[in-house]
Image (cartoon, rainbow, N blue to C red; front, side):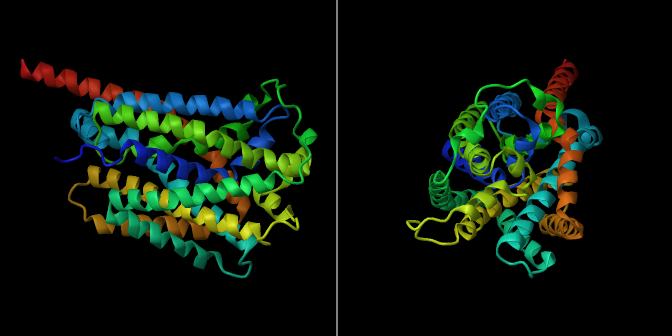
Length: 367
């Protein structure tokens, strides 16, 4: 019997945990640290609730697909032109997400291990995710299963080691907040951390049962991932203090550099962290490229799938290479806040309305 969804419950849990690892160690801690003078876990929890709301909205939308793909159902309901209009911010979000993730990881490698290696060469790592995305969804899932236990255990180990040589008083206030983060754009820039379910919604067909199973797995991943995300934020704070942490480009990497104890067997923990993060990145970039390929193949069914992925690879690689500074990466993340909020909360509503309109028109035509 043919499976109606290529992503099972455990697969979804694995993918979303890898997404957490891929996003948490980059600029997310920096944005959250800059966003508030109060307790950092409060904006973290608020975003987690927003992510659960967004994923629930998508799950209700996916439950109406009856074994079809999301984009195909929307096209059948409102046509290609209107589908392109409402999906344009989705394309822009996926493209910006790929460019910033690739450029951020290349920057991380340059700062920590290979300072003289050209960014253009490091960006070539995108080739592996592109090949994996072209191979299909199941190769991505199998790669995710292989990397999952290895990467999560190592990340957990790094967080535990990072608990050494900390001063907990630097993390205060632990409870107090005045909601200042709501008025800071850095808080909204961190929305990319919570969009894992959005990406998987555009890949593969769904039924009501598979959509509910996927949402439960995502909710479990959110709960399991919160301690990991909090660790990436709080460990630099309780080591360097708030003011210094705000000035750091990669606070968690700086924390790894600061660990120096006789009982730590491996001297260069930063290299281990960067190497582990590579496995997160390869799977998540492949997933994002797969989502781009699925959307383009849905809009242009006759297009050669290899050409689609080749063009996507070239576009992302070129854009990431043309970014001249880390400041530009941060600016892009801030400028695309509107796209991400649209994709998280507005698009599922428009998709639901599109399917409802198609169903109503279909009924009227059948009378």
